[in-house]
Length: 107
Image (cartoon, rainbow, N blue to C red; front, side):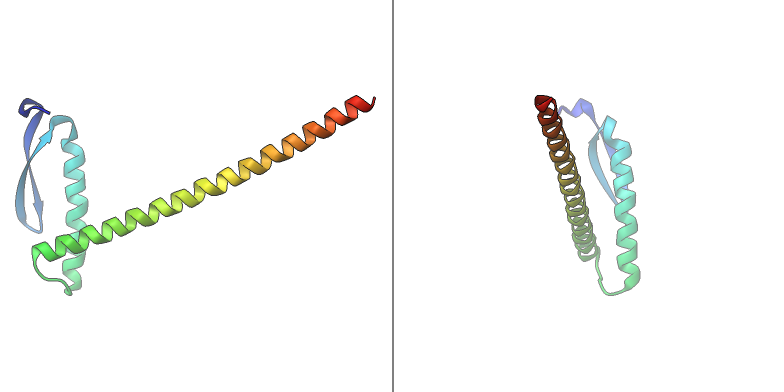
């Protein structure tokens, strides 16, 4: 990516400003991600158990990573269940087709 493709973007996390270079077509996603992260960091700060921007950021990152992994596991479980269901449907269709073929041969 060349510097012509990127633009400076400023985000705020817990009232501290950070500047990044960002592809022009990804600015909205970066800002939305920053807002989401800032909300998570504010929640952690409100609990009062974690102090300091870096520690709050690390705790928010760990929480978000945990949520991501959990949602991937749920998605994988759903896919596996759907595959088992489709496999059962295929087996049933093959059994019915085999039974129909046997009836046709016996006629």
